[in-house]
Length: 115
Length: 112
Image (spheres, rainbow over the protein chains, first blue to last red):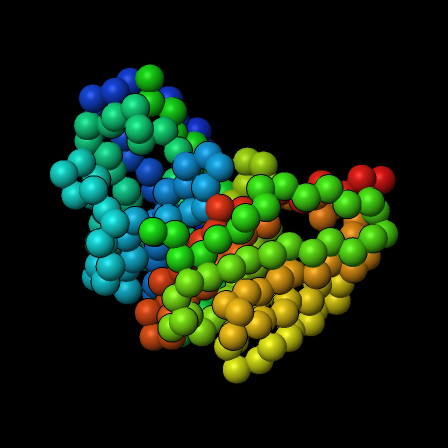
């Protein structure tokens, strides 16, 4: 069964350092999502791509976060500089399209700890 | 402002009994609802969904009920099994955007 791949699974960094997360969606899925999940809360959408284009980044802290999906396949989420409050699980998901009522399939996530 | 709410952080049920997980929403434009299950150290996995044109959807032991007038949905698991112990998230979206809003989750513990 096809899965969304993410790496690394765990990342520990010091504040003010740069970190990057990678996601490879299910083959053929045009839409890719990055979520942040803080402990005790549900996932919150950071950015949504349709192919290589950003279609929603309204919740992305653009002063320190950036995301790209250059060839419309895999994607990278970067944080620079990292802050203590960025400690969370970062989840990637993909769906066939962004039309209504498409199920999103999640990867295992990257757990980030900022010291 | 949280548009999807799960007011019960945890639920404990005996094996073989029914588990009922609840979810409330505030946005009347939501027209697609899903439940995800999440085990520790894993990403959420899709469980079941329902469109706003229906009030019930069933898949094996899992049934989701939607009450649009009350802006409420629930997930019923019958019979509950120890392997169902996980955190359950409800999510909602508005058609044509596929942007999901998640609740904060309910941790279900099914006791043998």
